Length: 377
Ligand code: SF4
Image 1: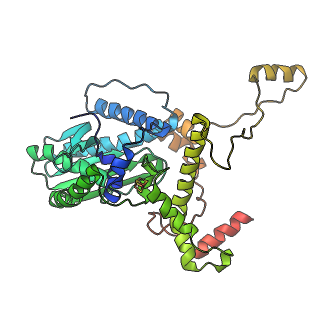
Image 2: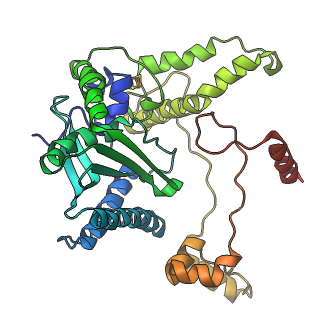
Image 3: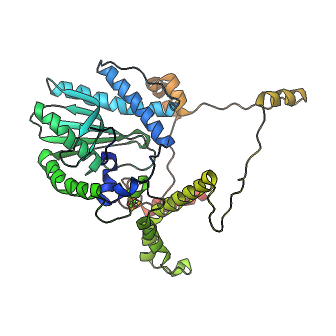
């Protein structure tokens, strides 16, 4: 088995919706973003902490990415996993635990394998837990192809040990306060593997099928130059915009549906073009490189303070409280809640228009109006 899966479970959502993206992406270099590197550091720490709990050998990883905020997010995930481990021990005499387990679904699609963050196997249930450290949008676990592939992969091990009936899939997104679990019977999962996954996998590996743009384009390496994605958005430009008041409600709803993706797409294309110009000297018709605006900075804070004090200006420092996260870490969660809990509150979030499939509860028109008025006072 090579180290690189051509059909990786983490790209499955994209491959299922746009099968030829696999071959198209192969002409682009791999991208290593700051977010991905930070995510890997977070996963390595979670793996270490869980292994420590399981009394397995592990060395604490070191990384420059370990901020208080990341450590807190990892802690939250690890606490949930430990709770599930202890529950498994309570209900099953011999539960099996795998941390960062390689899972292979090449029985369904050639070169399809990946790594499941946490697997807990008890007599009837194989539970796969996935940590996502992104700060973007909550990822739905229901019918999530990445986790369903992990489920198919883990069944080949779990069924040798127990009479598994259910595959339980959980996605934990601590930075979004989101934890979702979904159960699927092994029969249903295998039918999905044989029909949906196998078919899409064959098409994807051969570069066949139709290009189709959608939310899954965000992590596609072809996203900046893909014609299908561009065509999808340029359809909008064909709508006849005159005065906004002349748009029908249906037209406005159409624009709203794609506005988020549209903004992301134009920003992707802009970032790509700017990078080409700065790094590779590419000239774009009608555009030039200029220096951006910048703010004044002290050359040396120490020297500046000395000079200001020498000139008689002593009131030059300000004190501010450390953040809630820092204080909570300093005191520990329990102590913080006991001593300061009553002095902390969570303000209401800014009212936002979102699609109906967003998981947050809708607020009523009256409430929204009242809050808008209060905000504008
Ligand atoms: S950008 Fe979107 S439409 Fe284009 S290949 Fe990638 S996934 Fe398919």
